[in-house]
Image 1 (cartoon, rainbow, N blue to C red):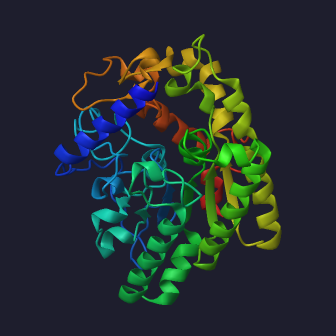
Image 2: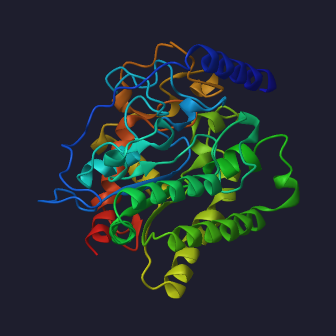
Length: 377
């Protein structure tokens, strides 16, 4: 296992050297709207903009511009995105791509791709692979943009918008915009469960979840102070069932110890939302219960067309999860039947389904309202 992990890092280093000049041509899922911040005329969007914070599940190219081992800017990533690797850790789209489409927004630009003001009016994606709530999470990948720094970057965007429009227009636009935050997974995968990090020796799962929530609350409070009012937060899915974890199990079954260890985080996020809403009554939240969503998809796999749950579509070793998708590796041909694209991330088909369920699905899967209901407030 140790040798395989080192091999995976070496592969990432090679990708960093040889693929750093790949650029993206982004297709548009939905017709570009006529109004963002400070626009005029008829508005075809549900909200003015969406600002995105997170990790590799929603990174759309920021890490392309970093000296990082956490990159996806090489084939076959993007094979179903006009056969173009964009930096998304997917064969195609991410969950926020699907949500942006539902909101009537264009593809949200990556912060480190230096979007212009017209692009920023519809939002910016600050997500960075290997990033976490804690600043030191993922440090073995070298460069990444932790949540605290992502918020710094958002503040820069706000200043740029205010300089080109006006502070009042921007404040009004931010209060109506969606702030999507998908954080926490790396604090477990690339910190708590990662050899070389001391956290699992210092904290039990409940204590570690409490540490994360304490920091998370401060970070969301800062976003609130900067003008955010409509938050969409994601929970952590069944981490013990992703291919990299299945590959570690002797019997190829989900590591229930891992699933159980992340449950306190999900529970505490819901409690945090309730407390935050009490102290900041004009702040509204949606919690995407990713754990329940994945269970829902597996329970209804035939309906959704999924039949392969125990391996990645692209990867090496046991369960295609010991080494993640290699440069120019040939992936599975039947990608729409797979739950997982690589050792860690869902396929595009799953991401789009998750986005649709979050936007207008059952309140059993999203709490206490859907993204559509949040947008309409």
